[in-house]
Image (tube, rainbow, N blue to C red):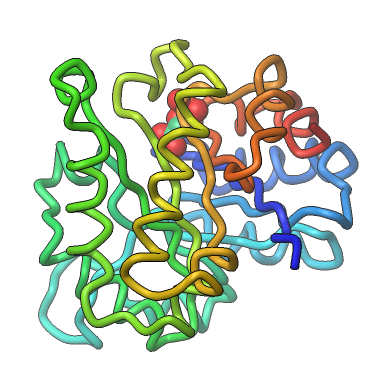
Length: 248
Ligand code: PGA
């Protein structure tokens, strides 16, 4: 069965609530497409107004992070139940910026992945290598370690719903995209890893995105690759160009 494509915007720390609603309205007609899943992953404070603003459109809303505890004394954190209640369908987990600046490790991410599934929110689980790791030739070893650790204890049925985003760190926000061949090679490696951990049916079902300076100019070539099922878009998700990526 063909995998449904998923194009997600990662707004990062951009857009105030009023700017967020304005952007949703600006993009509304440009991202219309019934053949792909379109998701806006937005800052926590924008979630409620954006959920309201996308009502009646084909766009679904995602969060950029969450905490794994149910509730309690975790000042500054947001729970899966809060996101779910607000209308969130997806949550980005393990973005390299969270791993780097906020020191999130795979043990923590595994707890977050479990909690997201428990709450009925689909994780968009990010993985990817640094430039040093690529040059050392350990890209796939590193990514397999991330995937195996982050998915420890996750069932095949859950993985079939999961979205994995392959984001080479050296390509994020740098204007330097992985070539379609490089991206395909790693996305295929991730699918092979899932097949080893689970089975072929699970590997065939899991959706794998590419992310890292994806834009209107390179999306078509990347999305034509057999193991690339979508994109996680940063910079280009904040402008009209995002519509061209959705329709690529
Ligand atoms: P970019 O970001 O498209 O701006 O490179 C992608 C991401 O970090 O998800």
